[in-house]
Amino acid sequence: MDQTKSSVKTIIYIIVAIIVIVAVYFALTQKIQSPTPTNETSDSLQVQPGSDTTAAIQSDLNSIDTGSLDAEMKNIDDQLNSL
Image 1 (tube, rainbow, N blue to C red):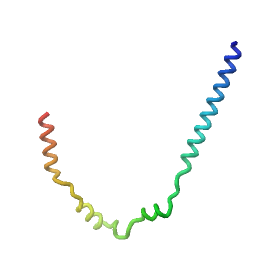
Image 2: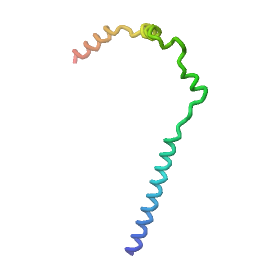
Image 3: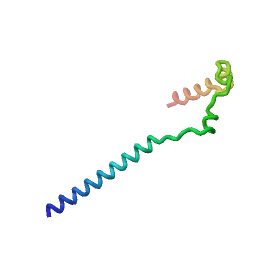
Image 4: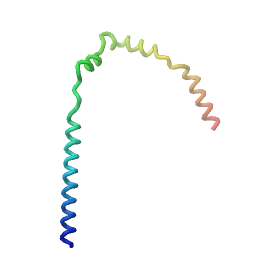
């Protein structure tokens, strides 16, 4: 009876070890296989000439509408003070 329990435990340990080894193998192979960029994606990632100059960046930053930050901060301060 004890020998049967021992052999069952050994078989279970072997099966678990095989499952772990297979899982680690698949995890490592999936991590290594990264997608290679195609022409479509690499073309869309190219920087357009003139769009990375300091003047162009400053112009883009100035064109962003942030709203009235002072009014929003005052509103937050009023809400915090009312607590």
